[in-house]
Length: 251
Image (cartoon, rainbow, N blue to C red; front, side, top):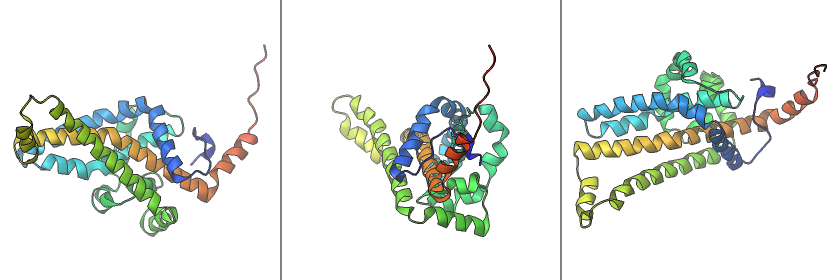
């Protein structure tokens, strides 16, 4: 990695502060993230919602299982953002084989339930580690940081749930007077297509909003851990100090 080309200030930080840096990265590059991620996300979600014809619970389950696959596109965008590079849909499409197809089975199966998924995601996708080298690298990054990675993931999970409840509460705000008992029964006990589709859409919306921040927080924590292990902040300072200033043009 070309450390001197990074567009973010590297220094050892508490892990919570590093997660905040990831959130700030999303805010700063929001246009690039949504311009690239949203078209793919909307198309895939639309296809997943069609599976409600097979089972009322299937769209929500598929969205849940595919979250790590969505995260791969987000990490691709964020890995360019830390170098100050904007990403377009064309860039993602040109790298689709690597971004969408890399270690697909592992991504969707046992790594799906990892309590520090976004923190260690870069080991597979960006470093390309495999086998014993990956296990050693993962253990190195997690040593003393498992609690921070798990805590960050738990926080974003609760934010996602809170957003879902907030969206569902809109139904009760606009419900006609006296219809709340029927609305509760429809929402909790009904297994109608409309109820299942509504819940799946709310879940998809919450995932689409929260997931970029979740991935960015984990990625920033990963970068922070590498700063701790490899002193990238010092390397940045040295390279900048010994890089000659560009010559000024003659008037």
